[in-house]
Image (tube, rainbow, N blue to C red; front, side, top):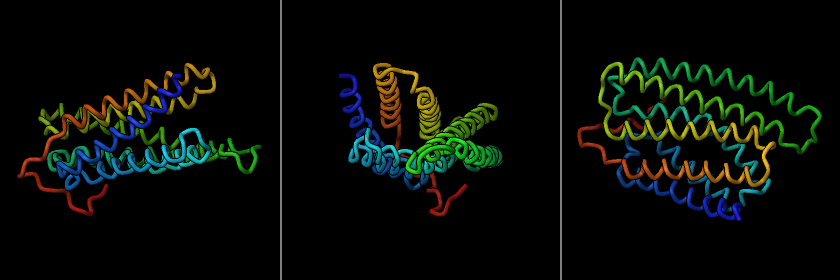
Length: 238
């Protein structure tokens, strides 16, 4: 019964991700928040693939782990994009914080390759041990690093007594909560074998409800940008 609830919640989660993307596009926020828009597009894309393949299929699990390598790049890029409306006021702090995040991510990737190499030893050629361990380590490192970046920037806002624009505040809270959810999901995957099916399905349901609620909150709180806010350049980067 609970597995069926989770199955329908997957459709709800995919729908709410699509609504967020449509909200970004209809408010024309993609002109300023390029990387956040990319993150929304990828979320909808991988939601569709998971529903098409079936979330319990081997193919879907393989796509899931491959998608986490993309997330490792998208998470810090989206976190960087959160403060695009304050780029002049927070330029130095922003560059310093993202450089630390990128450095930590490179170190985590190196550690993940070594750890995944040990996990692969003794497994069959078709085993997904290397892929799953490497993606899990990089995914966790990227989520925690991006979360740390947001916290540093959040504290910087308070220290400088800056009042963030509406969308900056909304994206900041949304990504802080979303990345906490990502870290919790990473931890769940590590300890999943110790749970029976009922407990595992219950935890997954809670995580999906959590993600749906914060995404719905974000959709409702986003607003069109004031006319005096200039769009980010197309070739904006980290």
